[in-house]
Length: 182
Image (tube, rainbow, N blue to C red; front, side, top):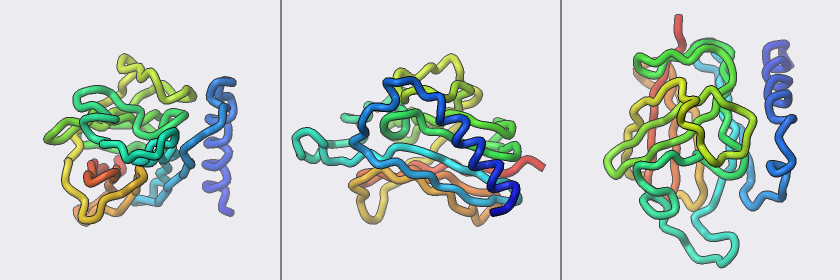
């Protein structure tokens, strides 16, 4: 493992280790980390992956507009807050996100939405503290070809340069492009 990857893993562990006791309760949603190298930057997102199916009753829940209401800050996952780590500054449109650790959350709308990048980290996903926002950037909303029963987040190369964060659940995808600050 390279020194950069090792330092990145140590940072993730250090950030997530001091979680309060309430954050260490049993989880009903699995957790995942996605990471990639974008123009020399190592970018990682760690999040909980809830299902459309209610874990208590088994019925399929309507996600967008119901389980996740439009116009309200949503934790972008389950359990602990979703964490973005980057070892280089990123640009989301005109918004600069310095190298470091951040919480991501989403404010979905019927015709789009906003991805919020918060300076507050190391907490349970709710309540969202909107006063700690570093930036809010537009998220493009579009239908998925095949619905996802479980929330998925992907980091992919952007054909126009840089990368794109994709948030996919139910029949909807939100996408947010970014570049690495030179």
